[in-house]
Amino acid sequence: MKILMVCLGNICRSPLAEGILREKIKDLDAEVDSAGTASYHVGEAPDPRSIKIGRKYGINISDLRGRQFTEADFDHFDKIYTMDASNYRNVLNRARNDEDKAKVELILNEIEPGSDREVPDPYYGGDQGFEDVYRMLDQATDQIVKKIKNGG
Ligand code: 4NP
Image 1: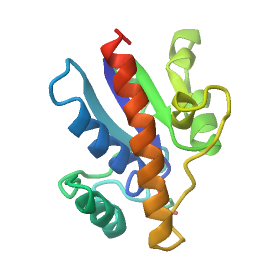
Image 2 (image 1 turned 30 degrees about the vertical axis):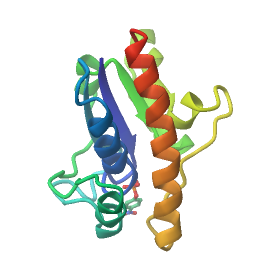
Image 3 (image 1 turned 90 degrees about the horizontal axis):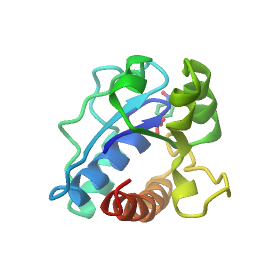
Image 4 (image 1 turned 90 degrees about the vertical axis):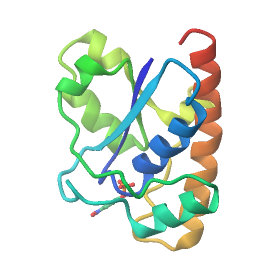
């Protein structure tokens, strides 16, 4: 199972999602990566606040570097988890066919199917926003791991 986490900048939410899931799938036949729909932060390390919240829970994401989502990601990945409605629309708009479209999901729908809840963009907020994001992603990735163990 190849999973891609997508947000806007690939420096706050999706690198955390990648780091948290990577830790949980260490012993499974699965891989995870992350990307942003925007190009502003390509090549950059994650936001220091995301690095800090990860470190608090034993997750090291400091080596990750931002990259932009591309259509080739539809070829490589089985599942593409987006953080909010805007990322979801952006990725879906790049889909070339129904097979591509079927790979795209809002990540919190793994916790509450069909709820269409979003992982809010924490970039302009304070530390509590990153704490909230961490908790949501921890729960969502638990569900993703269950799915992987059940064969996807
Ligand atoms: P992310 O957060 O999408 O979770 O990485 C953001 C990072 C940067 C910006 C917006 C959101 N920005 O506008 O630069």
